[in-house]
Image (tube, rainbow, N blue to C red; front, side, top):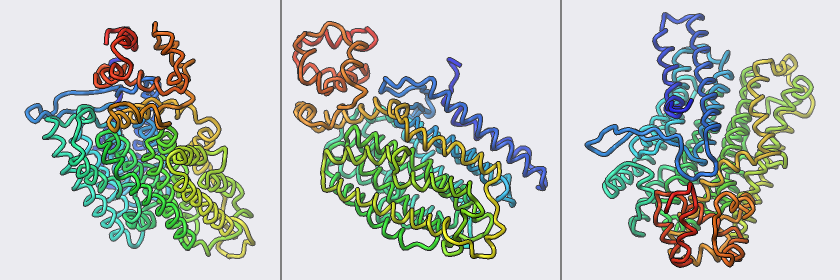
Length: 581
């Protein structure tokens, strides 16, 4: 498939599916509803197949953006259509493409009114999500970033619960108002850089004073999307009122938009401001982890409990991101992917029993294991994954975050660890109340176990949770080099003399970059003393050399020369594809 615009095809294929449903519009009825379901399902499955093709064509050893499609959109304004992926965005694209067909299957019989409109909303939402994670132009990014709100607003407002209109407007206003400041910041960056191109902006230095204001503007948008405490109050209402599939996408993908924004923009573009606000982020993250876990313990509604737990788990994400440490940032991205799978599955577990009993109250259940053993087993796996049981993806993400945080601040790590204890408390309390005990409620005595379609819905989520738990290396390898690139940019910006880069452990001490793996591929005839140096043995040099291989970033070549002297220039010239640096 060489030469095909794979990424653009992946972005806009769901939109073509939505158009096909629209063109097949009729007078309603069962036939139109079934056609809409099948078109939406096949469009989303083909999109998932394309994302897997993207993974097959992705080079995890390169930190550059890949699979790019680019053309001038508005040449007079220097605004273009520019999309591409790296190791940070690609896992989130795959997650989005996986959860959409899961959501469509989960809604197959539960949505009976306006089925065509419902399927169109999900397909448009998929285009917006994949486009947002792929956008490499600020204007394009903002269109996709805010475009996500429209289909989700409709999904909550039309197919939600009794208070759906209130929840939909609260969701829309919170997230939109937070994004107004980021739009102002984008406009400033556009005039400062002279272009809306994101890669160009990432290499443009901003003064520390300007960085503070730009960082705050982007923070206002990303913190609401995650959401961080105390900007989280819209989330429980949105989850409670949204249909099951709406909650799946809301928790599984939409909450990751803020974390992605912090990694893509705040850390590399505004490094001095990010370092300045790190204690502030740590404080909010710890409050979110502990406070919302305590609030979750007091909930009587299953959806609200899981919603508050999502805020706590995303606290680990922000904690890991702002360690700007290899383990911390890898853990944050892994936690985003893991939480996307686990939280989606937990909301689906609530939807299964809600479709049968039409109640989310914990007190209305008990003893389900006697009637629904398969459901009890599935619910158990995801509940234990939520509390970070080893062997599940939840453990990998949280462990890496805590490992990275420990190298920065042991007290922050200790406080964050209490959130895992509280998470186990509310999760196991919920499971015991719903699954175990005596089957006393009359309406539960006729409840039926999972049927084949529900088994099919849970299967990929179970597989992803367990595979990432036992063997996370494919994901870690995919994100490794891109994370290293962000960390190196951050360290070089904060310490142009290089002392911080080499004296701390905050850069590139990762097992996958031992010199035995790195140097056979990218090594020529460096002086023997440099080969045997402590810096090489500590793997601190490999990240810099890999970063220097980026032909578009001569700053790092100059930095290497400054650190080691002009005599190392022949060594630099042989790094990469054999071209002279």
